[in-house]
Length: 387
Image 1 (cartoon, rainbow, N blue to C red):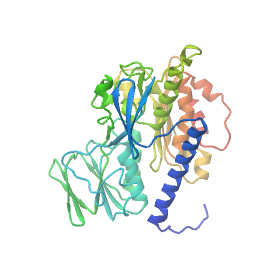
Image 2 (image 1 turned 120 degrees about the vertical axis):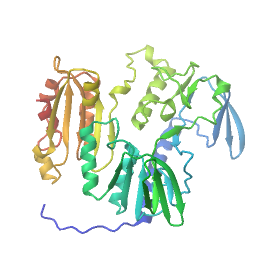
Image 3 (image 1 turned 60 degrees about the horizontal axis):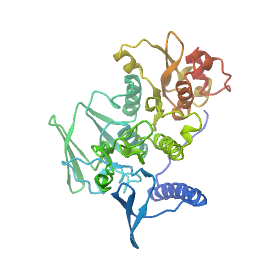
Image 4 (image 1 turned 90 degrees about the horizontal axis):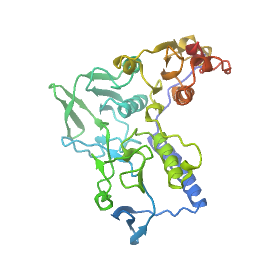
C-alpha cells in the first residue's frame, strides 16, 4: 500500500490495563442501565431453599428472597480434567490467559475448537511460539472442512506447529518447563500450556434439587420458552445447555422477559431457532457461519446449491490488501431460500449478519441479489455469491 511499517512492541501492563478498562466501562454501563430501571443488585452467592425462595450469601450475611419467577443464568467455567492441575502461572486455563500472566516464549494449546484456535491466534500475534494439539484430523471439528483448512494454512504460515491425531493425557510442570503428554507417546515441551477443552456449567452449588429443577450433566433442561420443568423457573446462557454464545444468552433473556410478563400471548412470538444462530471465531482471518453447513447437508442427503466466491475478486479486499478467504452461500435449489453460509476473511463476523437475516426470514438468493449495496465494500461479495 506504499506505507512503511515497523513491528510494534508488546507492553503487557498497558495491554492488561486496556482490557480491564473495556471490561469496567461495559460493566458500569450495564450497572447504570439496571439501576435506572430500579433493578436491585446484590453481590453474593445464591442457592435455592425451595422453588420460590433464594438464599443469598453476601459479605453482610445471608438474606432470603421470595420470587414469583426465577432466571438461572450462572454461566460456566473452564473444564479441567483429572490429569491436569492448572497453577495460573505456567499451566493455564482460558480464565488465566486473558490477559496472560506473561507472554509465553513457547505455548502449547490443548484443544482445537473455537476457544483454542482463538488463543492460538492471540498468542501467535503476541510473538509466542505456539504448538496446537489437534485430536482430530483438522482444527475446528464440526465446522466446514474448507474453513478449517483456510485457518490451518494461515497458522502454518505464521509458524504455528500442528500436532494432529494426538489426544493429550497429561500436563506436568518441571520448573520453567511444561510437558504435555499425548496418547500416541508424543511429548511436547514448552514454557507454558493452555487448556481449552470446553466448559462445565456453574450449577453444582445452586441446590437445584430443593427447587425440583431437573438437569443433565449440570445443564438445566429447558423447553422452547426457556422454562425448566418447574414452570416459573427459567434458564439462559451457558447453563441452559444451548449454544454457548453471548448473543444466544441475550436473546434467551429477551424471550424469558416477554414470557414472564405475558407479552408472548399479546403479540406474535417467535421462538428461538438455535440452528439459525450466527457464530464467529475471532482469529486472523475471521471465521463466521450460520444455518446449515455444506458438510451437514451432504451427510443428510439434502440437495443444496453451494456458491463460493473468493475475496480476491472483491475490489474492497484488494484495496485493503487482504484478499484472503471466501464467501460460501448455501441455498435451496428449488426455492432459492438461503439456508446458510460460511465466511472466512476480514470482518467475517460483521458480514455473516446479512446471511443470518436471510436465513431467519427465509429470504431467497434473489432477494439478496436484488439489494443495492455500497461499492466498494466486502459485502458485495455476498451479492456475487447470490447471483
